[in-house]
Length: 429
Ligand SMILES: Cc1ncc(COP(=O)(O)O)c(C=O)c1O
Image (cartoon, rainbow, N blue to C red; front, side):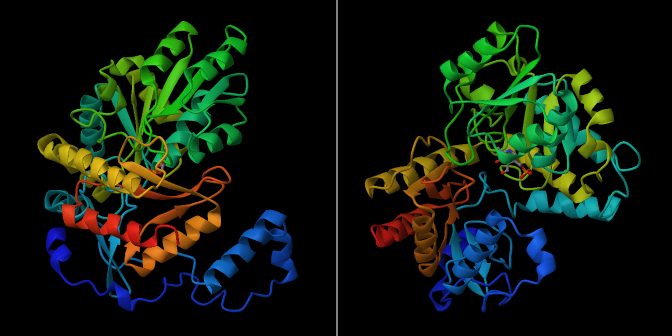
């Protein structure tokens, strides 16, 4: 279906500027009443609102575009077709007919909501079946789902540790990990990105006997590089620490069968104490999960706030995730296509002189420097019918703003050629 769209003549050139998600609110600088002045009175809040006003007035605001159909290599905005090169749909599973029909059947049998939290009335047999299949796929004894990956991180970290413990995270760890440590007031230290010797220094400084959790990611979401898992496992063993790996971007993608970063390195699953993942990237649904020992899962089922006090994932989301896991196992050719598309795209950009940093995976940053450069390049590409999202401070350090591109298995050669050609046209502007 998506391939057919490629051969259609696209009419994106008619759309002169991005859609306005603020409905004209910023057309004239809004006057702020004194009440909200106080609530949003910090210099950060003021400068952000001023920046949004300026970006909106100059048609440079390309976030929150309201797409009108399902996502894929092509998306639709205000009746126009665009090339989407920043989607997390790594395996190209959005729109897969078996996954869609599993979700529809789940709605017909179980309804649209569960009517409760998992612990009380929100669990269906679908939840259990999926969690068992997920654990079997990952090679752990048990797994459990949360309503998002973000909440899974908050739930795990805030429940398992307390302020007498220590968490050591990679300096590029995701916001949900940092936030979980801050909210639960657990002391947190950062080691230099992907640098085991920096981690070792932190571990050595730590008094013996203190429980220490190291948290890393399989693939880093802003840079597209892979963690040095073998070295980190060695350190965790040497210093008797615990290890958690966030696989939001590596689950379904790394390894010969998509099992994740341990499969990529040929390591044992149980060398890692806690696996965490998202159900909204390679798996085209919603939700998050953790996988690990039975004791860990049973304990978290009764104590993790986002599991105990927040509604269960809806049946359609669970059914879609469950069917996706089957598709991942039965359609391994998607991984081959993804690898091929990743190399093609990265090579094409590098040949044009773009800096893609240390990326080796499907996430390919085009590192530009200033936030303004990223906004402007994204806007230039928008005018060519390409959606490439700008990532700026604080999501990345100041001076390393970028467009974050993602290869997916749904892209074909003509699509990728058009993307590279678009980047050729805007180069140096
Ligand atoms: C590394 C990482 N962890 C966690 C999350 C949160 O996952 P979710 O989107 O399922 O909430 C993300 C989201 O992109 C992520 O990049």
